[in-house]
Image (cartoon, rainbow, N blue to C red; front, top):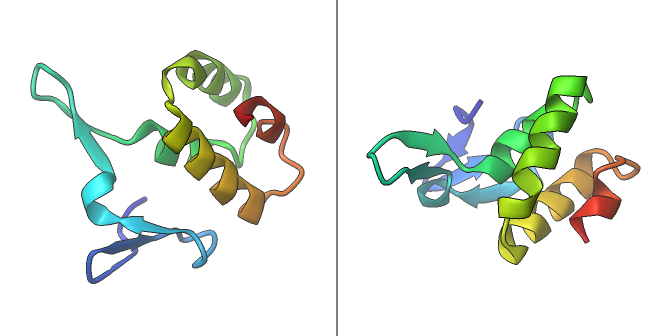
Amino acid sequence: MIADTHDDLYICRRSSAIVRSVATLGRITTEGIPYLAPEIQLLYKAKGLRPKDEDDFTQTLPFLNQERRCWLKDALSLISPHHPWLSRLE
C-alpha cells in the first residue's frame, strides 16, 4: 500500500497529486507496536464502502485531529469528490 515513494515522499497510487512525507506514514503505540497512520488507511478503505469500512471510519473519526481530518478530506476529494465521508470530515 505504501510502496510508492520517491525520495522521502509517499505518492498515493490512486492519484499522484496525493503526496506526504514518508516520515509521517507510521505511528507507534505506547506498547511499541507500529501501525499505519489511520487517515491513510481510511483513504484506501474509502474505495470499497463495505460495512466494515464504514464501521472503521465511524470508530476512527473521533480520534482524528483537525490536521488528519483535513488531509483525509483533501485526499478523498481528489480521488472521489462525491464520497459520502466528505461531509463528515468537516
